[in-house]
Length: 371
Image 1 (tube, rainbow, N blue to C red):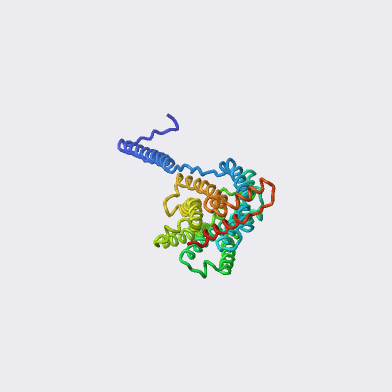
Image 2 (image 1 turned 45 degrees about the vertical axis):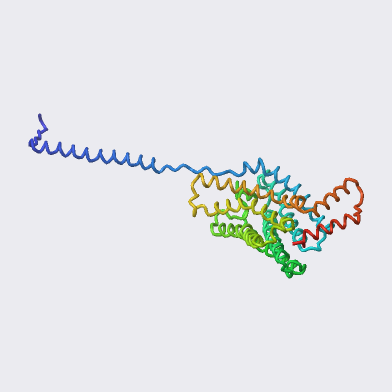
């Protein structure tokens, strides 16, 4: 052919080129296959299913508005009735009645917040930040002061049992102690007032009781600090006082002889308080320190969040319990209540007879001093 020259290669050079081509084909295809498999395996192994978080608003909307409204009505009525009977009928002659009065006032501080929490639960937390902080202060002050007065009542009973007259019989000492208890209860709520932050939802700050209201969501140190403060002052302190006083009194021969006196009422009040607030404190502690107990997996976190809310609702019922205990365990209180209710039903002014006044005086004296 004109214009073209045939180019020929030696046989061994042709074989060499064919071999190199096969090697290159194997070199490029194998890594590509291995690379594809490696990517697929990594995607499969690194898939992490998101945790299903507990939604507290379901229970808040369904239960809290009705329950808290009922607790507010019952707690307000029976605690006001307890205050009236203690002040007007039983009087404040005995130191125990002064402590019972302040315990009822502490319950009223707690009860007054319940309709607002019920409103926030049913209307999506529409209260503003200042009102939320006021609710937090009243709620926490009522809770801490109740714990303190329970402890003081136990100490008062212990001192009267062992005839420590300076503390048990002095109204001046009792007044100073009560004042100090209220001051401390208010001071320990200041961190809640400072660090409380409404929850940000839909670009709006809302006020909910779904989580512990005093725990900042993103500040681990303060969350742990405030949780420990709640556990120590609101639960462990009254528990320690109760155990020490009860065990010391139980070791004495007089313990069985005095089982029908005032310490039975005081210790029953303390036991009910510890039983109703204890589960919440335990659940709150485990929820705050879940990583230290290997409870931060999905199921544990879900169950802890649910337990905190349920135990808190159960503990809230305690605000109505103390006046009922007075009725069942305090003979003088029950007599005054029955007489007061009878007078209201008859629409007549109370006219105590001399025999009734003597019986009541003997009952209160036996309840307060016959240990």
